[in-house]
Amino acid sequence: MHLNNISHMDYLPDMEIIQSDIMEKVLDYMEAYDADSYTAQDVQRALQKEWLTIEDYGALLSPAALPYLEQMAQKAKQETAKHFGTSVCLFTPLYIANYCENHCVYCGFNCHNHIHRAKLTMDEIEQELQAIAATGLQEILLLTGESRTASSVEYIGEAVKLAARYFRNVGIEIYPLNTEEYRYLNQCGADFVSVYQETYNTDKYEQVHLSGHKRVFPYRFYAQERALQGGMRGVAFGALLGLDNFRKDAFAAGLHAYYTQQKYPQADISFSCPRMRPYINNAENNPNDVHETQLLQVMLAYRLFLPFAGITISTRERAGFRDNVVGMCATKISAGVRTSVGGHEEEQKGDEQFEISDSRSVEEVDAMLRQRGLQPVYIDHVRV
Ligand code: SF4
Image (tube, rainbow, N blue to C red; front, side, top):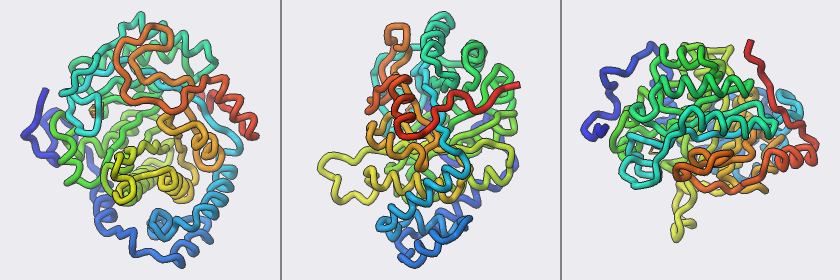
């Protein structure tokens, strides 16, 4: 379905509208956020506090904080130890389909690209699940791409039911749903929901989401709230850092999570930190570029602003970087990753969404964590 002419701020008729003022608050704050207005004194003040205000968080995300990364890292390490001990959770994603009805200009999966599309049958999904379960993992994230037509809620529900037989924690990263649909998937066995806003700059959002349901900004923004209202235990937030001004986007993603946590104190809140890679020939000058230093700054600021929040480090990042951030700020790490449809047990059926930088097995990641004095955790929550 192509929805080129729809307004990016207006809901479509099938999209549920919930009562919430979080989007307004986040967008107002983001609009006013000027990362260049902060000084070294602002950063030092923030680093002395136990609990950060929104202003302090803004300071830690600013360019003025770059010379203080070492101090931020030390404080982040203490906070992580205080709230998570030495635990680091392991999980793996399983792509069960890669059909997509959206046109996001930055993604190779978009509906205009002629990639190899596929969708696993229930038998194929079960074989994949069995192969992954044999590695010892107890948490899985099911992904589909964003096509209601190819990957219906019922199809996802059946996949979740299967996954819940083999895994104690089941997450989903699919297109945004209405509350009752989240409730249905929760009853099927899903525990948590990841939805990334990509950018919180609504003008940029309109420019890069040309068609499809994803074009509707507010419906996506409120996905986490609908998921929690539908009974999900946890929700993940994230901006695609570098798509627009990454400091503003990280600021907004942090506030999105913060206000959601305030409204739903029982919720498990976490962040993912995907980033656009710097463009070749443009690496020096583009203020939106997010190199590892900037990515680290964002992850540390997330940790210090929301000390209880989980932070997941993706296999898009290289092994050395991943190893350094676990225990310091990241609390969850993927292992044994394939980003193709299938490929754990079955032969790969559909193309990969992105190339991974860290192809280590569960065993290898487990060993790395132990070597660093960390405790690999396969399950941190039991569904009763
Ligand atoms: S980013 Fe997601 S929704 Fe957009 S084209 Fe890629 S897979 Fe589809």
